[in-house]
Structure formats: structure tokens, C-alpha cells
Length: 446
Length: 194
Image 1: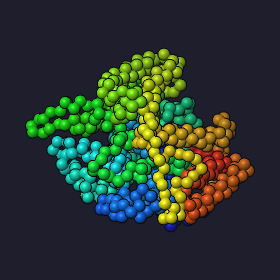
Image 2: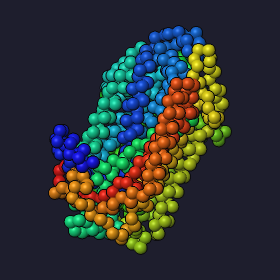
Image 3: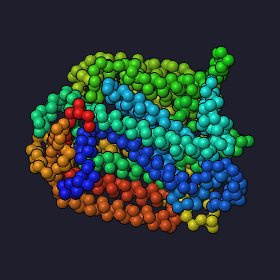
Image 4: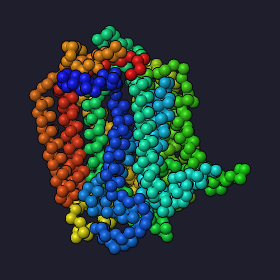
């Protein structure tokens, strides 16, 4: 191995990379969530490239000659027909399509869980505020990537659900028309909508995601990881590193030890996605049928990660809208853009709202941070109640009542329950019982 | 208030909304029939399989499934990570052998980075057997995957074969890490710029 590395080093002057090859990665289980997101993105690029070989981004009618009996001989939009062809007549087309879909969902979910981990352990604190902001942008881009891809098959369900986004974008005063033009080609769905969404989905948004991932990683490498509180002082070949010494980071070298761990993360992520793709259908376009402007699907709902935005729309009273200086602020704008934007802004700005004077390099115990944990619990509860509101028709069906009383109950719940959760969390955590503490809490600084 | 009580209070509030949300999301909206395929047009059978599965999932159901899958993945990662890091290396307190010069990689020790822990690999024959077996298994799954592509292209079988292949590769990597890779930990100055 030594001769091989010497051979490579001599020819490619790889010694410039050596400071990075040995970079220390603290061996914390939860730190691997970011890698799950990263590898999901890699899988998305690879499977998306395969799908792109067969997909036709057009709604011009073509005659379908594939194997799905229901549509044989029918005139179908080109996009829909190409996805049918890819799914049912191309060897492993259905598998790769499902794989791409499930990887997209895991990508968004793992980013969300990664962010929750960073938030609750306080890993966003000085000097990592900027990387938190980059992470929030990445989360938004991941959702945008999923959204722009959702309607590409031009099926009835997705096209109707995607139109919610069009209505939101075009409801923005002053900028609405420009955004509708930029993203949807002016109206939705039209001949220009699908090629535009396709271009955004396969080129612009992935490029932005790749760029922000690179920035996220560059900041991480520069600032180095946070580290969980050490249980004790650490004896090293150059003396003792004290347990609270944040000037030194201890972990596995990037190459080869952490690389092996990362390889296992990659393999397990792909194995999980394979099982999902093999056994569970997602977005069955043959079942939904092609977009039909004359009909509306029995159930309309966005992807699960946008359900809370849809919930805000459903709970917002229709009478609550107004005009200022000639600009109309519609319920779509106030609830879908305004309220949802405020949630994103709050998440983005949190590290700057509660700045710290000194740098913190150890993660904290969430149970030792009453304010931050209470705020986080309230936020999670609010998003989940809003998500239930997005499915108010399902809840009404389950309870055997109309959506009116369900909406009233959820409107009360979205104010009361997060507040109750925050207060209970705060009062439960604020008391100090050192005997219970199992980790160093000094960095909590809450 | 004790730590466990605090944890229960916080978890209880989260569960009080998470559980109803998932119950609503999994609310059955009606039966969906399997898509009929004309086998005279295409010889592949993507819908054929050995387990009856749903024909479609609503976005709300997808949300529940993906979070359960992610939690499952996290549990698997935690278990393997702990196995790799703790179970196979010598227990704390046992002597570790510092590496001879030139036996480890040149980038491990620099002016700003040094060895915090080093355990030589056991190179036990168990590891060799595990790696060999798992490598053979990965090759078998890869062959099955390829043959499925060339024949009926059944989606369920693709899923099983590919998962089998990657699980075998994961196992093989874990075995190599545990038995044949020196366990190295490094300490690094935060202040240096690389």
C-alpha cells in the first residue's frame, strides 16, 4: 500500500490533498444523517440520468402503443405516454422510476432529520451559523427539486396538486407574474410549463443543490466538525487532551477509516431504497391517468413534506384578505407564501436571533437547553398539526364528520397545542438536577 | 425533575401529534386495481412478484413509509457503526501498539494532527471467512440482478437482488473494517486551515 501511495503521489503531486485525507471525523452515530442525504442525492442524479434517456418533456398528443391495456390506441400527452412506456415496457424502468421517487423522499426526510439533530443539539451555534443557513437553503432546494419533478409525468393527480404551487407563486404581489413566467411559462399547465419544469428539475435545481452541497462541505472542512461531549480526558501520542478542550477535535481519519464508514452508509442507504422501490409503488401514473382539464381527482394533496403548507391554506379564513396601495394580498399569498415563508425565515434566522459570544465546538444535551428545545418542540408540533390540516378531508372521513368542525378544531389546536408543548417542555427542562446529567453541559449556553 | 421524566414529557408531546398525523395519513381512501398488461406487446413483467403489495400509495401514506424506512435505516446505521467502532476493537484499557514509521498512511500524522488511539487489526480468520462469504454472496446477487434484467425484469426481484448485493457489500466492508483495518483515531488542531 505504501508503494502504491508513493507511486500515485509522485505522479499526481497528491501531497497537496494530504491535509484533507487525514481530517478528523468524530465517530458519532447521528452525524451520519448528512451522509444519507448526500448519497441519496448521488442516487437521484444517477437514476435521473437513466430516466432522462426515455422521458419526453412535451404535452403534444401521441398515439400510445405500449402494453398498458387501458391506454392502448389512445391519444395521450407525450410526457405521460413516455413515462408509461418507460414504466411498463423498458426493462427495469419501473424499478428505476420507483427508486428515483423513493430516493427523493429519503433525501428530503434525511435533510429534515439532519436539521432536527443539528437544531436540538445546538450544533448550529457560533461559528457554524452560516453553514446552518446554507443547510436551510439546501432543504428548500430539495423541496423545490421534488416539486418541479412531481408534475413531469403530466398525470391528473400530480398536475392538479402542482397547480397549488402555481396559484401560490402567481399570488405574490408584484413578483407573481414574473415567477409564474419563470417557473411555469406564464400559465399552468400549458405547452411551455412542462419543458420549463423539466429544465429546472434536471439542470438548474440539481446544479444549485450540488453547488450548495459543495459550499456546505467546504465550510465543514474549514471549521471542522462539532463533537459530542467527551466522557473523559483523552491520552494521545502528544500528551493529554482534556475533556473540555474544544481547540482539538478527535475522531476517525477521513481516509481510510471514515471512508469505510461512509461506504457502509452508502450501501445501507441504497439497500433500503432498493427494498422500497422493489415492493412499494409510488406515484402510479397509470392509475391516475393523463391530465384532464375537465375533471378533478377525488383526492388532491401535495407530497407529504409540503402538506403543512397546504394545511395553512386550508385553515386560513377566506375572508381574511386585503389590498394595500393597489396590491391585493390574497389568502393564497398570506397563508401559502406569507405564513410558510415566515416558518422558513424563523428557521433560517434562529442562530442569529440567539447569538453567542464565544465559539462552541461541542454538541449539547437537548434536555439541558430549555429555551431552544421548547421552541423546537413547538415548531415540530405546529408543522405536524398543519400537516393534519392538509389532510382534513381524510380526517373528516375517518371521524365521519364534515371538514367544517375538523377545521375549527385544528385551528384551535394549531395555536393551543404548540404553546402548551413549549411551556411544558420549558418548565420540565429548566430545573437543574446535576445528578441526572450524564454529559458535559457547559457548552449548552442556553 | 429526573432526566427520564423530562424525556417522557417532551416525547409525549411529540407523540401526541405524530401518532394522530400518521393515523390520518394512512386512512384508506379506496381500493386501486392492478394495471392490466398486454403481454403480447412486451415480454417483461414488471408487476410480477412473490408478495402481494399495494397497487398505489397516496402522498400522505408515502410520508409515513419514508419516515419509518429512514428510522429503520438509522437504527441499522447505529448498530453497524457501534459494531465497527466498539465491539471488534480491544476494550478500553487494553494496550494499543503505536504504529511503526511507514506502516500507516503519511497523512495521518502531520504538524497539526497526531494519533489519539491506535489498535492493530486482529486479522482473525473469522474476518477472512466473513469477507469471502459476503463477497461471493454479492457476486451471486449481482448475477441474479443481471439475469433478471435480461429476462422478465420483475420489479420485486430487482429490489431483493439489489438490496442483497448492497447488504453483502456493506457486510463485507464492515468485516474488513473490523478485522483488517487498524483502528486509528486522530486528534487535530481546530485552528489549522486545512
